[in-house]
Image 1 (cartoon, rainbow, N blue to C red):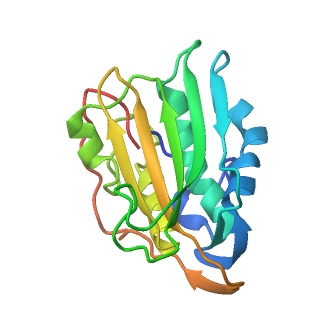
Image 2 (spheres, rainbow, N blue to C red):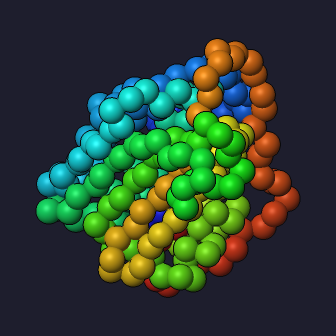
Length: 212
């Protein structure tokens, strides 16, 4: 899997630190958020890639800032696209994970959680790259890439009280799983997204794979 920095909030121009860090939260169905990604994929994925949407039958209500969350999702989808070749496939899947299930993180209560998974049949990542992919400024790409895409995407997910797991092996594809708590009450509010420290220096470039 090649991981590249995608501007999470305006892919056209803004540098990673210039976005508005305040999240505006309200209830949304995760299925609808994922469906809305479809129109954005032609500019992200290479031609000849099959895209499969496998959405849960019932609503998965989460409290979210949908624009910020879609930006985080698009970062991981762009990474998958960088790893895919014509004839490959990308599967976007949502499901309800019950509390007590082996797949449900222990932090989530009786309501369980919603799971959004992004699975590609691309080149995958070595263990060394996977362990570093969320470090601020870590990148395996030369040039203007700042190595902040995955870092900021994870911050957004964590500010939704979510967690991320990554399963990947070189030449065997990658699955990114994003767990988000299910909520049953209508809530609206605002909260800031903590940013990585700007004082941290960029790390070196690895030879295998591409991350940023």
